Length: 157
Image 1 (cartoon, one colour):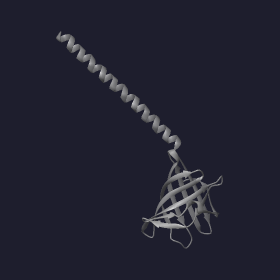
Image 2 (cartoon, rainbow, N blue to C red; image 1 turned 30 degrees about the vertical axis):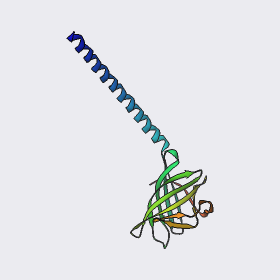
Image 3 (tube, helix red, strand yellow; image 1 turned 180 degrees about the vertical axis):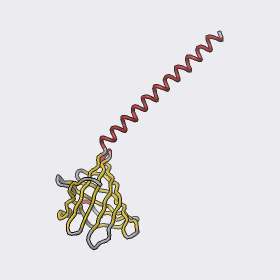
Image 4 (cartoon, rainbow, N blue to C red; image 1 turned 60 degrees about the vertical axis):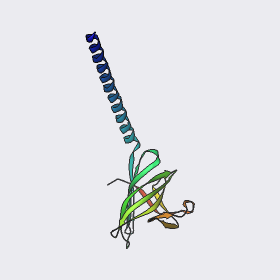
């Protein structure tokens, strides 16, 4: 009787161990599949503008679910250079993001808006308000595009 009981215990342990091993393999496969999907959906593109000693460099990484992150640098003639990173969302062809940047040794945050065209990006502007140490647009519906500055596709660096 003891031998039968010990045999049952041993078979139970082996069955549980084997099932746990299979579960780990399935979880690992799902993780690898998820990572591969993320690689496919994540894409990075760069855009730039250069004219009359003014340069703007925009690096946009599209993430899943319309989320976006990237880097932005303004080097405008006779103005302070600023550069930083942003995180935001696509709303149709419009990119709205919070841009955290450094200029003259201080860190600031402001909302940015770019409109995507077939040729590149056009930055938008409008009235702003300062709320909790962040400069935000007063109303998205009143934004205007600065069509004099088109950021065209270029190789990322």
